[in-house]
Image 1 (tube, one colour):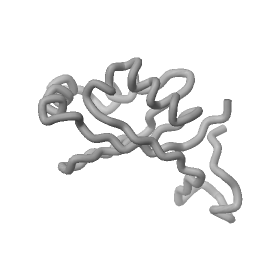
Image 2 (cartoon, rainbow, N blue to C red; image 1 turned 120 degrees about the horizontal axis):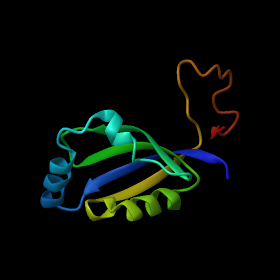
Image 3 (cartoon, rainbow, N blue to C red; image 1 turned 30 degrees about the vertical axis):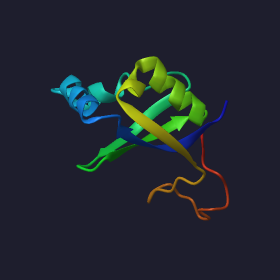
Image 4 (spheres, rainbow, N blue to C red; image 1 turned 135 degrees about the vertical axis):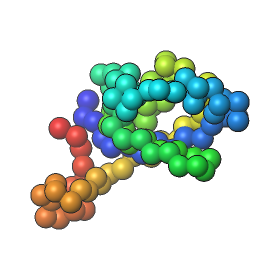
Length: 108
C-alpha cells in the first residue's frame, strides 16, 4: 500500500500521564526515541513538543488507522490522545518540485 504524510496532534490524558511519559523518556536519545517508532505500516520521522498542551509528530503511514493502531499496540494511547490529519502536499526547499500543488505527495 502506498504511504502518505500525516501530522499527528497529541495531548496528554492528564498531568499524571504527562509526568509518567517524561519519567519514561528521561535520558532517552533522539535516536532511541525513533527506533521503536515504526513498523511495516508506519514510521514517525519528526517530533515537536513545546510547553503547551499539544505536541506533534510527522508520520509516514498507510493510513490514519495504521497510526492509531500502532499507538494502541505500543500502549501510547494510555498516555495521550491522538488526532491524525493526512497531508496531501509535502514541500521542502530542496525537493526539486516545480509545481508544488500539481500532484499529491506520496512516499516512494
